[in-house]
Picture 1 (cartoon, rainbow, N blue to C red):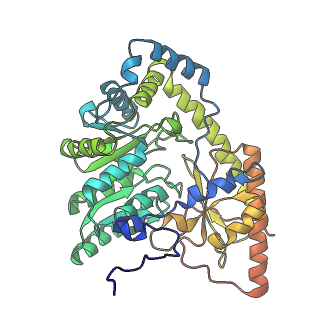
Picture 2: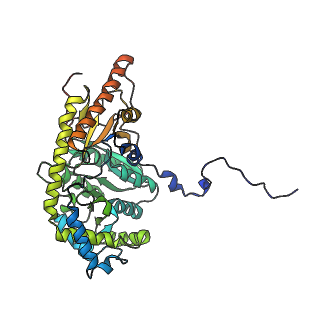
Length: 440
């Protein structure tokens, strides 16, 4: 009898299933990216994605500047390999940008990345082993949660209220996890106009959170893509401006210039920066030199501060359009946040409505949103929705809110007729949420 086994005939779709590393099974599809195919259909009003609106960007000026740069002596350098840390000229300009929020930094402590998303990936890579804990505000940025999951880190959410992350809950989490023998590697927070909630940490909260971090030895990773897009003035200083050694800062040009250029940065203490450069070189050899030269040229030839003012005026008009439409169309029991900047409004739905289950019916009604469950690592958010006002015109925003209101009112009517269905745990920001005053 032959000892050779007959060839195996699998019916599964992925013949490489047994070969993947364990971390590959922690990777999940982004709920936001999964919506793009549907949300980008012209008949659908998309209030889902956080795409910046670059319609007001002076493409003629940018195009001419990039052409001149390529044809100059800098052209060959822009098309060549670069430094793993990023180009010196751009790192110096990044320090000027961060100074707008009170940060005093040296170019040697800046590492250029492929968007701030890569910066977050590199930080998680160098800090986290499987099973390590990352603290994150609740709710938190879906892209960060995906990154943490891909490195098999455990995310523990910390409560937020209308003033931002609650310092007492943060302290309790650190102490409790330490007592359980778990290693907390860092706190991840978006203090300015948080994605998805739109909440801004007050100055008092920033100081209190920093005090907790000092008391407990907690590292803070401050993600600040929206910080310069304040819509009502009163820009707050970055947490990094108050503490140099215990705060790592993530920045990006995606919201204030162009997301397609994919240039971000990490400001970190010297020892961390050394590890970041090694991780960057292992991942990409160097961040794209051409993109860095484009950003550097833009910052040099264009009044980028005035351009940010143009963007703020445009986003304020869109934010106001959404906040004006919500009271007119949302059913009784719906509440929402009032963002002072950034791109997003966070809705808490009437009891019994599940945002994930309702999404197909909303798309059928030609409106898209992002369900709240995408922004939690622990199953919360079923009664929450993130609405984005950054991309559609004010008229489209109002129409999208109207269509969403039709769907929600039908769901509410079904609940009244057949009884409230449990929609699972949720998270609301009670004090800042604005109740809908109108009756149906």
